[in-house]
Structure formats: C-alpha cells, structure tokens
Length: 169
Image (cartoon, rainbow, N blue to C red; front, side):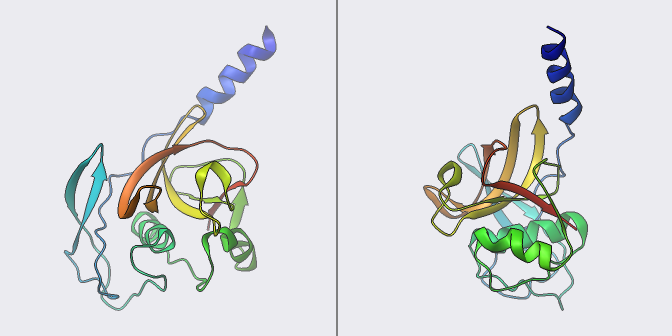
C-alpha cells in the first residue's frame, strides 16, 4: 500500500505545465521570415499561429520531416538551434551525446523525444518530436509527419519505455 502511494506521488510530481502553444508554421523556404505562419492540426482542425525567427538562421533538416519540426519547435521554445545535421531521427540520441546535450529517460516539457526504429509505431528511421505536456504517464508530443498525417504538425500521446529518450541542451 505504501509503495502504491509513493508511486502515485511520483507520477503527480512529474506533471508539468504545458509548453506555450505552437507558434511555428512550416514553409518551403529555408529562411523563415519574421511573421511566417504554419498550419497546425489539432483534433482535425488547422490553425495559423505567428512564428518569430531571425532571418539569418536556417533549419538544416528537410522541410516537412519530423526532424525539421523538432529542430524548429525546439528553437522556438528555447532560442537554441539543434547543432547537428544529417541524422535520421533514430540517430539523435548519439548526436546529442556527441554535442554534449543531456539525454534522459525522464520527459520534461520542451525536451525532444526520440523514438527508435519501430518503437510505439515509429518508422524504420525512428521519430522525433517535442514534449508539449507531461501528465502522469501521458506525454503529449508535437511532431510532423507522424503516421497517417504526412507533412502536418500533430499532437500525439506517447509513453516512456525501451527505445524512448528525451534530449535537451
């Protein structure tokens, strides 16, 4: 009984406020001008939100891929660029370690989730997204190009476990 109460307390302690709502909007342009907008899909409805990024910064990942979105959203939340390039989603844990980033099995709002090949339905090259909310065992993640929604930003619920890591600077 005491163990069950302790476990419930740990889950409640993990609950975190949600990240600020999406502000990025994908564009086929590499340099995103200030004020660009990106459609976001939530419960089947698209919404436009403003995006702010310096014109001189570039996202090294292919537009409309999960890696592009994760790098873009992470920059939006933290004003930090993902410094590695040319890595499939499943390779982001190794690349993060090479660049001295923190890798953990514990989700935090604003961290990048990395799903290895085939984990929780990810593709053979893995999948990345950004943690938007942590509520108990439920991790709400924004990502692009997930499942049956290619080239769209969606919110999906994932859970911790084997083949799942969280990275942050």
